[in-house]
Length: 215
Image (cartoon, rainbow, N blue to C red; front, side):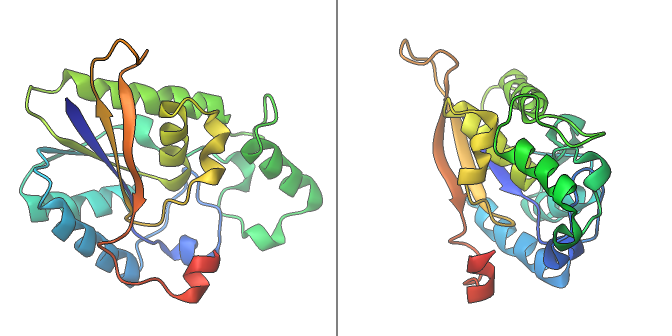
């Protein structure tokens, strides 16, 4: 059985400011770096052999901290990027016009063909995320990879492994530096072989504040 661990990047400056990141980027905050250090201590116990991150800076920095702490290899895979949010990237959510907010809601609520102008659909993201996951099946026997990616992207991946629509990721709370795990096992009852073992574990992190619980 192949075990694949999934980690969301640490908190960024734009996470803290409630700005839309998508495939744009901002640096980790001091808290985000601390989260990466804490998740590294947990990851050290998991027997990770490969760290694979999206090619965006926030995941790369998180992955570097983890890989250094675990002493394992690190590679980038652009298929693990966050959802392309098109013309809304870098925007403060509170400043969106009614029309812009409708684009965002159509996207996350699963409206057929929903996408932000200049961006991608949830289905398109699900296709590349699942391809990245399936590529782990080609790793050497005995591998235990860890994928460092993004909140919407990982939520989408977990949703589709569960057989849910890609936009069901809105029903999953994946905090910064949370750990999830999906396993691949051959079974006559599973069409694709992937199952979700855990999702959004934050037991290794500092206790969140009330404000963080309300986000």
